[in-house]
Length: 118
Image: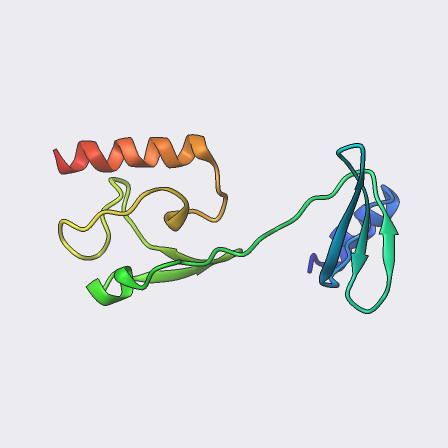
């Protein structure tokens, strides 16, 4: 959760944070209109922003001995500026090395790793 100062700024802008689990998304004519939350509460909405945690879908990095670090959104493989891990000649790129998932960053990371390997 954000700190009290940030929450105060959100309140001034009529922005709500709902930490409850989502049961169902409701849409009309392909537009999201409501979320039903676990526990029976529903909320009409115009927009929804989510913050999914990072999850490494494979344990191969751990098996190889790569250093894993915790970021603000979860686990990531630690790399240097050339995308090499702490294990010589083992590189990682894309969403597994960043908190922010972004195709542009992932592509650039892949290019950097490929150049370092070449």
